[in-house]
Amino acid sequence: MRIVRRELDLADMIKAARREAASAFGDDRIIMEKYLRQPRHIEVQVFLDNAGEGVYLFERDCSIQRRHQKIVEEAPAPRLDDEKRAAFGDTALQAAKAIGYVGAGTVEFIVDAAGNFYFMEMNTRLQVEHPVTEFITGHDLVEWQIRVAAGEPLPARQDDLSINGHAIEARIYAEDPDRQFTPSVGRIVHMRMPAETDGVRVDTGVREGDAVSPYYDPMIAKLVVWDVDRAAAVRRMRSALDECQIVGVRTNIAFLSAVVRHGNFASGEIDTGFVDRFREELLPEPTPVSDRVLALAGLDILLRREDARRRTAEATGDPYSPWHAANAWRLNGAAIETLHFLDGETAIAVSVRHTGSGYEFGLPGGAMTVSGRRGDDLVADLDGVKLGANVVPHGDALTVHLQGVARRLTVVDPLAVEDLAESADGRMTAPMPGKVTQVSVEDGAVVKRGAPLLVLEAMKMEHTIAAPADGKVEKVNFGVGDWVEEGSVLVAFAAD
Image 1 (spheres, rainbow, N blue to C red):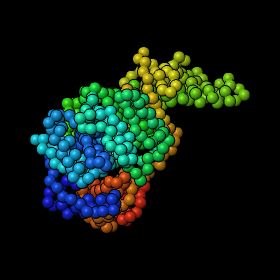
Image 2 (image 1 turned 120 degrees about the horizontal axis):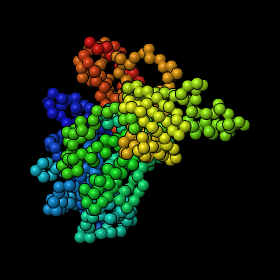
Image 3 (image 1 turned 135 degrees about the vertical axis):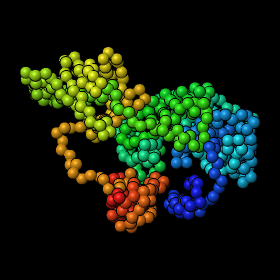
Image 4 (image 1 turned 90 degrees about the horizontal axis):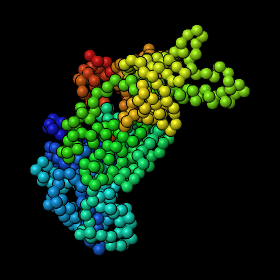
């Protein structure tokens, strides 16, 4: 989908849409239609049997989107009265009956600010977001599909159907919201989702240890909640997202949490431009890591090291040897060591004094007494404040989950030698694995800032690599059809 705001852009937009459609669907035909500002995306679940009988199971609001793809859906739609709800349902059912449709289908509408609604399309299948409809109606739509396919009549008539409470679904993706929601690939080294209850449902086919590849849609799970009304469902979704932990790939969990905590979402003032309009609030600039998170990271490192030394000692013939100690002992000196971290690009040194009963940390904000123990989670005492956290090591980094917030830190080994001689300046790298679908420049081309250089396709989406400044293309390293790995140097570029 492309929005054309200027006639000047029309030809390029048509070409891009055709390329993406041909790649994804084997068909490059496109349609052109009127663009509505700040619309809502509302769809109706319909179901028809072989006898021509049909019902609608009310509507879903799917207005919270990024890249024109749904990420939060809810049922029923907020700020919709019974008269308008019936108009949506009756229209959708008439459309399905007009083509003799049988089975589950979704009729999608776009709604302008005045409440006028326009037909967009009908999806002839059960949608990703069907669980919210199941929650509010109490009916299993998959069972309905099987019964209708077997020739049975619909299990309920329109008068039998009613709305009970409110349901919200959030789609958890392997993607980086800070990089224009670019898909993230890699292996999931840690995954913990909320326990399922009468009001919480988790649909996923991904487990801890699985790899997210560049070949398929990057959705990891659907988190669905229900409660007696919308306000209660919003609170339940906030709490459920706080319990989600995924490490190994970037995810949109924190972004989704920011969406459902936003005041306009809480009041139901949503439309398809919500994410773009509140982008700065939903994706704020990163803040410096807190002393509390640093203390938890340091404590976890020390406790894991003590556990490892203890296991080693028990496996030897001399478990009481002083060489098994992990307490930074020094002859005629204080038992002090330093832990080194990177918070993004910021280097942080944390001094640790071993006290026998715990530790005293020297942190950016001052000294802190620290003690704790490890089990499934980390239980810590920080200056008398008891906290539970989960710390997950992965590679040279660790991720601290504390009170619904995940913070990633790089653990630096000061004795390791890193070759920093070669800088990435002037080299434009692939943000993800993908296939080159278009090359717009040749070696030696002089371009202006923002000019498209090449197009990379990954996970059903195209990503344009543009010139970061006025300058010269020194060398294009790949051609159309080439597969590139994340970090591959696509173009050598010299800024003017």
